[in-house]
Each structure stands twice: as structure tokens, then as C-alpha cells.
Length: 398
Image (cartoon, rainbow, N blue to C red; front, side, top):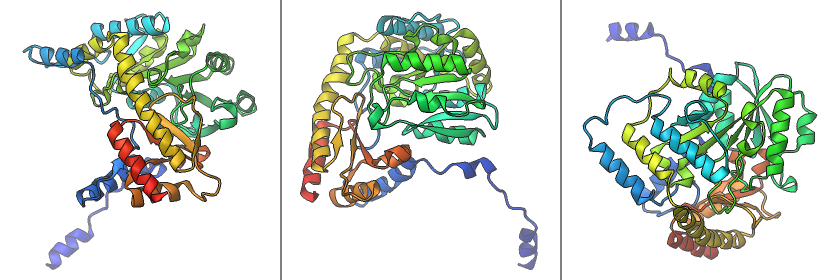
């Protein structure tokens, strides 16, 4: 017994890397564990929080995956750069929908989702101590990954008064000497502000004059939006910008983890240099199925991304009104962003009341930044019947 105690006394404690002190557990990771526990206890909580499409990809996409996976030679390692069929499909998709010409050989890089792309772009372009411009409100991963990689996060404001577009006068007044990357996201999440060609043009001009890489995250163009746009439509954008696009939202494939980045061949080669040292290519049948999905008929997008979400959006607007929240009806994307009533002291007080008394989980806007502290976000990724039930419960409480 004494020998055991003495031997343990000499063991050194293993500590985590210092970078973990820069971030906490992702809000949804923590909260979803709570929701799962409460559901196991019989609470039957309806989640209107996560942006994970609940509809399937096109039938042709699924059939392609099944057919290709049955082939005996389909299960080996794949190139990190992606197979030619996928890169060509991605380039063709940009040509058809955005009128943007991309060389599939060098100007496109398939990704295992945009989250991975944030990591690889930051590693390729920013050194420890460099500054990164992040929108507030904005996707939390822009901030958390930048911190993990040793960059200094500098927030820039998006406000309702400016239509949730960047304030370029405020940006020009900043000390930009240490800024390497600027993250943008249009159509915007969480606010639903649509892309504007004027904003894209000003971003390209801003990037060129200051030597800053602008990365536009563009996964929401096809949700409740009749006019998809890309920053790469701006002349000269490929010289100073990268655009992400993801199949998660546009093609109902969140679990497939397929996305892309597009830019000039030099930028793409630098990113591939990082990525090739971290992972191998995606499963070949999955890549071929994704390539097939990029050729979905426009009618598929109209039905999956416009009609269904429009029906759900009508219910989300009713929920906003039931909570006394106001919202911009011109929003696009798969969420509805609303301002809480002035007499409500705290957004989390409201969302916790909805959770604990109505058993409906909605997202408090503070997780997206200081400018989201008076807002909530409702996801449209739930069946309309569930949303109607959520509305009924909320009306009983409020």
C-alpha cells in the first residue's frame, strides 16, 4: 500500500496545451448534450436551433453513392486534391449558377466541409500573432479556430442599421497593418442579410488596397433566395479573395462533409500544401455522388430549398410574433433572426424560458457576438408539423 502511494506521488500530471485556454466547448456541443439528457427523461424537446437540413439529397445522388460503393476497386486512398470528376462538377456548377469561370485543375479545392477550410486557410495565410478580422455577429468558428491557431481576433461590427453589411468607413479607420485575413459570410448567418454586389465590389477593393485576404463563406445562396451571387463575380476577386461553398445546406448533405474553396491557382496550391499534410481525399464513391448532386435540375433546388423552407418560414415568423420579437422579412437562408422585445432584460432569459416551459430549443444570439445579444435565431430545419407544435407550446406560455 505504501509503495503504491509513493510511486503515485512521483507521477507528473499531464496538462492540456495552452491554446485550449483560448476557447470553450462549442455552445451547441454543450447544449445538445443537455437536450439529449432531458429528452431521455421524457421531456420531448423540439429543437429549432441547429442548421442541419432534415431532408435527403436528390435520389440520383443517393443512387450514385450506392452503385459506386459496390465496386471492388472503389475503397482505396484518394488524392487530397479531389478526383477530377468532382473538381470538374464544381467548376461547372459555378459556371452555370454564377457565371464564374474556374479552372478545375488549379482553382478549386474540395473540402471536408467549410469548417475544415477555415482551419487550412488560416494555417496557410496567417502566422502566430497576425490579426484576423471577424464579423460580429458571425459564425463562432471564425473566432475559435483563429484563437486556437494563435491569431489575434479583431471584431468588426455588423448592425441592423447598416443592413448587416460591413461599415467600410469604420474598417478604413482601423489600424490594418497586422491584418492578414478578413472573414465574410454572405448571405449572412445568423442575420439572414442577403449578398449585395455593391458589398462584394467594396470588399474586393478593400482587399486589394490593404493586402488583406478576404474569405467569403457562401453556403446559403440557394435557401429562400432566387438570385444566388458569388464574390468571384467581381472582376479581380480571384487575385485577393477565396470563396467557400458547401453542399451541406444547398444540397441537403450536411453529414456528407463535402465543400469547396475557389480562388487563384497560387492560393489553392498553398492551401493544398497544408491540407495534404493533414488528411487524404474523401471516399471515392462519395465524391462521385457529390459530383452527380452538382448536376441536380434547377427544379430540385426550387422544391427542396424554396418551397419547403418557405412553408416552414411562415411558421417561424408566427413564432417570432408570439414571442414579441421583430424581424426583417427580406431575410434569406435557413434561419430567421429576430430582435427580442425592449422590455426583455436578457436574451438567454427568454430562450431558457422557452426551453424550460415550452420545451422548445431556440438559439440565443449572444453566441454569435456582442451585436447578437438582443436577438434570437430560429432554424427552419425541422418538419413543419414540429414547428406548428412548437408554436402551439410557445403560445401557451407567452
